Length: 512
Image 1: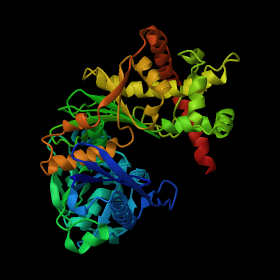
Image 2: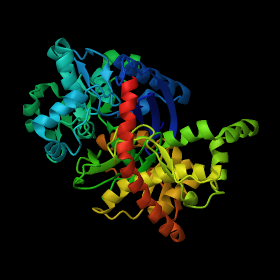
Image 3: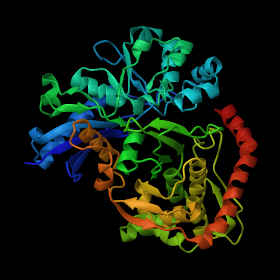
Image 4: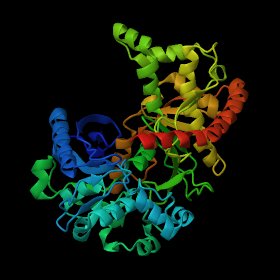
């Protein structure tokens, strides 16, 4: 008989259910996708009933395939997409689809928040810029545009919090998810009365705040069969996906840092105190450990830039990869090795989807700058990875001025590329460490949170034992000078193109 922790990761594309034993061994996982709806430009929604179905189906599939008895599952814990807004009534029934993190309809409401609060005040209280990305502006949009729904709203919930309600009948959230709402007083770990009063919203609409490790309740008998769990199984709240990823990466002590390279990419670390950037380029989550924070900067188009390169400029490599039955990125990486670091002084600006941190410019666009007749496709390929890495260095430098960062743990799909890892190490001039679990780190973080919550683990430091560092890529000092020069030019190039980006965007908007 084993002893297991079930973690659910409610992402944007679907839910991933994962079983770990109490020694941190990954036993199995099951994924169930769900639909995202785009009713209008910049509107992005999901149906919470789809999340519930995904949790039920993936749990039952996982248990059926592994043969593990639900009696051996010690608890269930959650990671979830952040910054959304789901209004529910007193019985927990959704009053509309959830407005998810990617939805940008509430620009007007975010502007209003800046007027009544002030941008700096909002940043100082919450650790985040005021933005339509966050829950508060989305709630104000509903108040203004769907007043009947707003009137009947009993609570607003995040994805994982809705599932927890379905399991336990308790309306709760944790500090990490709350820190992505533009409503939490970051340092007090409490809803901000100043913001709530300024926006004139009902404080009772906000769920009860708890540490991520709190047990929200137990699985109710009337849903146990449907979800595939034993009635009475403890339900640990867990946290937002970013904070869960930090724990899964082993960033559980002050000063340690990690980088996720997926479609987007972010750098974050663990600190006792928030890092407030004077230019508000970065922001702060609450860590799963309630006594820690996770300062963070997120760029929009990391892996997206790499996949754009593959899909549009790497036709030969894609063709050959099909013939050889290998990943096309292997051939692209082989080609990159033919180009010297610096890519012949070719610079790529990775702003294919505008930019969040560090630029906060939705009008920003991609560009190749410095292209000469002597450049090869290998130089172009290398410049894309270097441009993404320069942009991440802007974020890293902000944090490095406050906390001395000795090395960076890298997770996500991009961490499988040895070529990219070497570029990261060379441009940052820091060792880059690679743990065993790259794409399971988020669910591992949720599982560790569950174990801490029920007392199976003493603290979050156990994550470092479960996801050990298996490789380290050291920086090559001989490339430090060329990369430092090109990094400065990279930043200068962005600044000088800002008016061009704005002019192009005005043409874009005029033709919509």
